[in-house]
Amino acid sequence: NSIKEAEFIISNTDHSKCPAPDLPEYAFIGRSNVGKSSLINMLSGRKSLAKISGKPGKTQLINHFLMDKSWYLVDLPGYGYAKVSKKVNAGWGNMINNYLTSRENLVCIFVLIDSRLPPQKIDVEFIDFLGRNQLPLSIIFTKADKQSRNKTQQNVAVFKKNMLNTWDEFPPHFISSATEEKGKEAILGFIEQLNEH
Ligand code: GDP
Image (tube, rainbow, N blue to C red; front, side, top):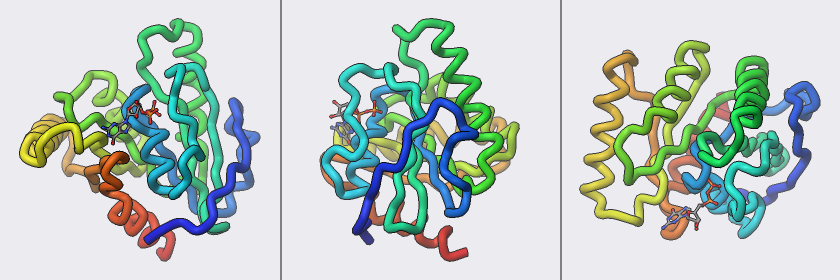
């Protein structure tokens, strides 16, 4: 499972200027520094398709990439960067909210969660927002190489237990490491499967 062709298409602040919704689309989102750019680069097999964030929280853009001319990968701006002003944060909220709730070709939203941490309020709130809006999501637990496999499993279990307090089921989930190229096949396979339906 690999992507042969990855092409940057456009960056937008306005969801209405995104490419025509004529291909299946998959969005990636998470807290600043969660490892989103690294994951996108791993998935696409390109070293710097997504910019590894030198200045987290600065780029507030919806970035469309076309994969193998058959689906869009969308890099959404990270949330929860402490130094971003309230005004910028509010703008982020509107832009992302509008995009997520109106993008008709959106097949799945991959929410990236740092596998090393206990459930973070901001992540739980974002996931609950997706739930309230009945938006399809999957969870990717990132940076798994930074701890033992056991510890990762423990943290995933805690996250799941926490989520099942308010959710009926735990969504599809993946464990990834950009440094060890882990999770790539499973995630691309999942996307491929959805694309076929
Ligand atoms: P973003 O802000 O979510 O796009 O995060 P980046 O991809 O820019 O990564 C933030 C930092 O975490 C960088 O220093 C990366 O090198 C590091 N990082 C990202 N993914 C991994 C991973 O899977 N393993 C390890 N060990 N470090 C990672």
